[in-house]
Structure formats: C-alpha cells, structure tokens
Length: 518
Image (cartoon, rainbow, N blue to C red; front, top):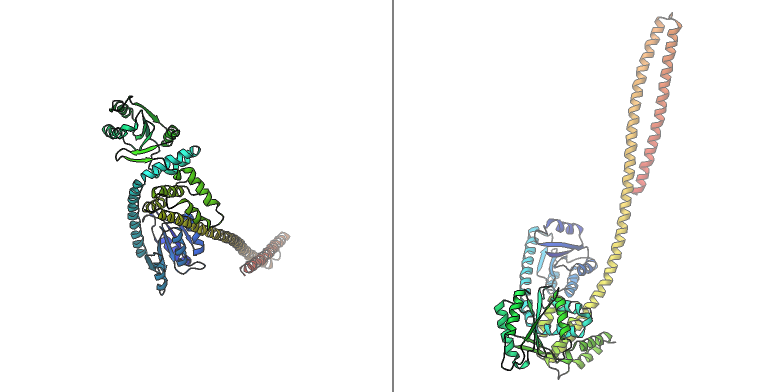
C-alpha cells in the first residue's frame, strides 16, 4: 500500500480531501498531514511517503519550497500540486522540480481519484521495472560481491554476523537450507577438468550451486541447496569415482551443515582462513578470481575509512583520494576499493538500501578508468555530506515543530478546561430552573388550598349569622377554621421567601456566566 502525506493550510480543504477519498480502496494509506511546509518537512522524513499532496501557498514554507527540499531528501516522492486560479506561474516553476500533477482548487473528487489511479499504476510498473533492473545488475555484480564477502569475513572474524548480514540480501542467500561439499586432494593441474565434471554431476542429481567453487591448496569447496541424504550420497559416489591421468590420490569427500546459512558460512570461513591464496571459480564459465589484491584488502579499506573520518578539513579529502586512486592502479582494483568504501562507509555493518546500492553499482561498473572511479568516490562523499547537512537542518526544524505542537496541546488543554467549566455552569442553571419550577407548583397548590379554605370560612360565617343562637361548640369550630387559614397563609409566606432566594441565586449564576463569556 502506497503512503500519502497531505500538506494544506486551509483546515476545511484539508479535512474535505481526507474524508472524500476512499484511500484504502485505492491502495493508499494517509500517514500524515500538516498545515504548513515547515511542519511537514520533518514529518516527511519520519513517514517517508510515496506521494505528497501539497498546496502552493502556505505560511512559513510554501509548497514549492517544500517540494524542492523533499525532492532533495528523497527523489522517489511523487507530488500532486493544489492551486487556485491565477497561480500558473507557480505551477510552471513546480514543473522544474519534476511535478507532473497539477489540480485546481476546489479539488474535484473524481479528478483526484483519477490522478491517484494513474500514480498507483505508474508506481507498480516502475517497481516491476526496477526489480528487473536490480536483478540484472546484481547478477552482474555477483562475482565482486562474493569476493567482497570472503575478503571482509576473513579480515573481521569476530564481526562475522554483521558482515554476513550486510551481504546476505545482496547475494540472495536463504535463511537456511544450504550445505557445503568439500572434495580433498584436487590438484590444480587438472582443476579445469574437475570443474567440468562438477557441473555434470550437479545437473545429473538435481543439486543447485549457490556460490562459486572455493579452491584452496588441493581442496575444492562448493555450496549447494536442497541438502537431502540422497543428494549427498550421489555426489559423494560420483566424486570418488572421478579419476584423471595425473591424479595420484583418490578424492575424499565430506560435508558441512549449519542451522542457518550464516552458520554454514562461518564454518567455511574457519576452514579457509589459514590459506594465503584463495581462488573463486565459477564452474559454468571458468571465470576465476584470485585473492592477490592487497590494495583492496579489508584492513586497507578500514584504514582509508578511518582517514576520511579523522580528516580535519574538507580540503584533505581530495588529496587522500589522490593518494589511493593512483594513475598506476588498475580499474578492477579501484572498483574493489570503491565498493568496500561504499558498503561500509561508517563501520555500521548495516546493509545499504537496495535501490541506492544498485544505483552506485551501476555507476561504478560503468567506469572504465581509475580517474572516473576516483571522481565517483569523491561525489559519493559530497552527496553524503550534503544529505547529513539537510538532515541536521530538518532535525532542528523538527524540534521547533515539536515545541510548537506542545504549546498547541497546552492551549487545547486550557480550552478544554474552559469548556468543561462552561458545561458545569449550564448544569447548575438547569438544576436551579428545575427547583424554580417545583416551587411554582407548590405555590399553585397552596393557592388552591387557600381558595378552598376561604370558601369554607364564608360558608360558616353565613351559618353563624343566620343561627347566632348556636352553641359555643360551633363558635370554636369557626375559630379552628380561622387558625387553619392563618397557618396556610404562613406557609404561603415561607414558600414566597424561598422562591425569592432561588430567584436571587439564579440572577447571580447568570451574572457569573456572563462575566466568564466576556
């Protein structure tokens, strides 16, 4: 899935683009966004997107400046430029940076989808083509890489795991499933005939050789895949049956096994480490490489790397290169030195990215003169220094962006707290309104009771007027009714005071909320 980064200062436009495109359905993943170019640049380095969608006009660092810096850091990024009307001059400038996709705002959904479809297919085709080119190039580079593995492993036995890991991907070694066959008493006088028979024997039993034959003082070692007992027994019998006119001793065959390919090659290095002269022979073609190149020895390359690192001034680098790549040096030796410097420029033991390695290999092995190789080594160092400088600048900007983001987070936190306080005030107001409504209901009930009591008093007073002669008991009953009316009136007075207090509290709360808004 291809990774996309979006740089747009208008929040509405940025959110619209994010939501209107079905990224995953189209084979994309939106890995980041930024409101300006300065904030976007460190995020681009961190996320390493395949595609950047950016507006032209943005604060601090505009879209064109962002494209220019991003393309210097990673030339593989594809750009889609968003622009309003009247900005065609900016678009023409963007084309000088390799921008081929230019969309007018407001962005049309289908137009952007069509653009994404085209870019996805282009990326797929380019990836297929690149893999094919890399496979061909690595095939051409097979011999020097194989020799480089043995030379560096012999020179750094204590650091073998890191050395093997660096070459494993470039030589396409599997994690496991390899074994080695050692045939002893093979004299160099009939070595060519022996190698031809090796090819025939391996073909007949279906075994595949994954590394050139390593020949050291009357012993031939070859690395094979598919380690079955049947293959081993067939190879053993076939080798021991071989005989040549000048042969004095019958061949002896043994096998090496390892849990992993790394374990197997560690055993091989241990076996051949005591020999001064080592031959690497490709039996199918007869191509032979002899370890007699002291100039390209790993210890020499390590010393050269140390000299580059310890150089006090940039002006010393050309003189160092001139002292190494002398006019009398053959191109093959110069290529081995340049290859050793490239594969481990800082002793990190890390395998370089495959596309970068292939580009360097292509340029290196197209050189026919030592002077061209010396110039390539100088350019490679200058490019590395420039990239380091850019990364340093971006790191500083990244720190500033992180500080700004931290300040924004603090501001957002304060805003969130203000929102929570406002919500709490609203909850208090609602509670007081509910209390006020309950008080009004109580007043209505009291009014109803008072009206009912008044009717009763009037009725009884009329009875007293008409029957003044009634007994004292009737008078007491009237008095009792009067007391009840007085009690009800007192209750009404109390509820009225309560409602007045609630109204005052409500006015104070509303005034507090008004002051907070101000």
